[in-house]
Length: 348
Image 1: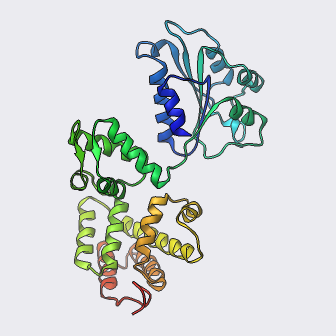
Image 2: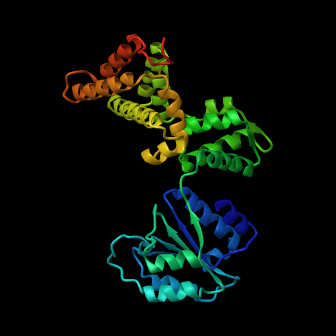
Image 3: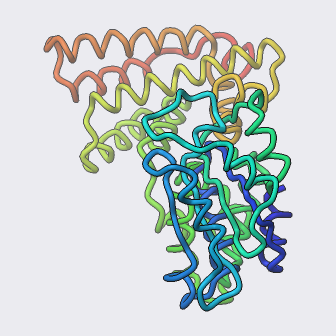
């Protein structure tokens, strides 16, 4: 759906009404920006681009603007933010003339493009107004991208800047930068500039130019623990300290990561697939894929014990019984000297 809408925008085949909603704000904004860039020249925007917020302004003010002929151009673009009346949210202090909105939805202005920008995960399908808006509008649902869609989005953004990327480079980028589109966009812009027009981004360049997020460092640290490579795990911990990460935050990230490994391992044992696990845990499918591979390195007992030990360490640090840095070092040393349990890498 998103590709079709973007393709029509690029060809300047505009709808008079757009309804953009979902919990991936970067895709919402990217769609809106594509629409503005295609519909209005830079010199037209001062006169023919208007933004209204339904949490601050009645909807009829935006509709009156949409019904006003454009100045020095073919069309107007009216952005209407936070149309909460399409959701189950309670009415706010601003009163909206929804009868006028209903009338406009049924007969939109031919010289205006009205964009409802709704950064909500769901709309209230029971409402007559919501049903009408969806029927009359070009609808874009901006949900988190599945892994294949995410890779395609990364590759397309790189190619739009005149560069290419190897599959391995995209793998490393997703592991290092995560799956948040705004963060990925910033890193892609940097990598494309480094590669230059016609250049190719390789994995080595990503490793050199893209800093690991704290979550990625914790993933690496746990991978080193799984391999019983404690010198490397300690070095990763010290690198985090060098980057001004607090030991108490590292403990919290480790606890969250081991809980994720335990949850994906348990759900997989019940027969859940990768997409089902992602939906159940509200985690991106790519993170679930990585977590499943890493969880296979641990027996169930190891994961449960690590979670309990992290809870104990957190209590000892917060009660002042143990130094924060020492608490993490002791945990890593303990995990490194513990023999692998039965079930890790199969039975022996």
